[in-house]
Length: 451
Ligand code: GLC
Image (cartoon, rainbow, N blue to C red; front, side, top):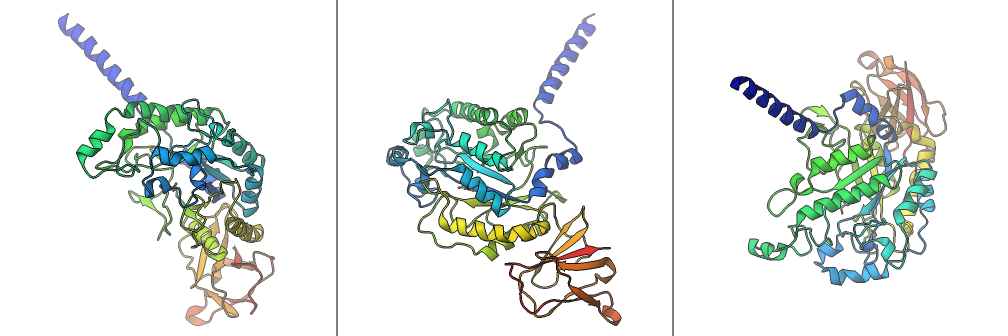
C-alpha cells in the first residue's frame, strides 16, 4: 500500500514538472512552417527602419544622452520642447513605398526611454510633450494604408526608467563595483521587467496586426544585461501569444534557445557569405544607415551614394538576405532632405529593376558571377539577374552558362542582348554583346531567362 501511494505521488510530481517544462517552451514549429511564416518578409527583401525620438532635437546621434553622459534633468529640455509640427506619416509611407520598401520598423521606444506611444505605464511619452498626440497610432495607420507591413523596434535598454539598473552602457556608468552598488540601491529590475511586458502588451494589442518586432539589445557579462535581465524567454512567449505571426530579431540573448529568434541582424556590415548557425543557413537582415547615425544627425556628412545603397541592397539579396535601411526624421517630423534624395534615387532604380530583388535569393551553385557583378536569382520564375556594378566595355562573358541560357535582356527596358558562345574549351561560355553606352539606370541589370 505504502509503495502504491508513493508511486502515485511520484507520478503526480513527474506530471507536474512535465507540464511546467512544457509551458516553459516556446511554440514549436517545423522548418517548413517557419519558412512559410517568414515568406512575405524574405520575398520583400527591402524595408525601412525609422529611428525617431527626443534625440532628434540635439541632432547629434541617438546615443547623445550616453555619449555626453547626460542626466535625466539635463535631457529634460528635449522632452519639454518636442513638437514635430510637420509630422505626416502618410508622407513617410509614400516615400518608403516609392523607394520600393515593403515593410517598416519604427522605434516605439529607444534607449533614451521616451515612448512615442500613449503608454499607460509611464508619463515619459509623446502625449505629455507639447505635441500631445500618440505618434505610433498615426504611423501604423499611414503605413498600412500604403500597403506596407508594420513593425516596432522596442529598446530593452532604458536610460530613463527609475528601476533600470545602471550598467556599463548607461549614461551614468561607473568605474567600480561599489559605485554601481551605491547607484543601484533601490532600483528594482523586477519592476522594470514587468514594465517591458506591460508595454510590449500595449504595443502588440492596441495597434492591430504587427508584423515585426525588434528587441534591442543584450550585452551580457560584467555590468551588462542578458536574457535573465529581460526575462527574455517569457517576453518572447508573450510576444508570440499576442501576435502569432510576428517576426522577431535575435537580440534577446536567446541564440541557444530553440525558437529564440527568427533572423540574425548583422548591423552596419557587409556579410562575406550567407550567415550560418551550426552549419545551417539562417534568415538574415542587415540594418544600415544612410550615414553614421540612426537618429537625425545634422552635422554628420558621411552619406552613402545612391549607387552604394543599391549595392547594399543587391549584395544582401545575392546572399539570401534583406536590407533594412534607416531614416532618422528631424524634430519637425520630416525626412532629412539628404534621405529624401537617396530614397528617390533608389525608387527610380527599383521602379524598373525590382524584379531582381523581390522574391529573389542567392543564385544556385554553378553560376559564377563575372568580375564586378552581383547575381540574384528568382527560384519561381527561374530567372537569373546579373547586376553590372561597373559597366563593361562592349562585351561581357558569363562563364560556363551557355547550355543553361535561353534568352537575355536588359531588365529596365526589356531590350534583347545578343550573345554568342565561346570556342573550344570555352564553348560553354556566353559572350554578351552590350551597347557601348551605359543605359540610363544607376546599376544596369541583365535578366537571364534560363532553359
Ligand atoms: C544599436 C544601437 C542603436 C540602434 C541599433 C540598430 O544596437 O544601440 O542605436 O538602434 O543598433 O540596429
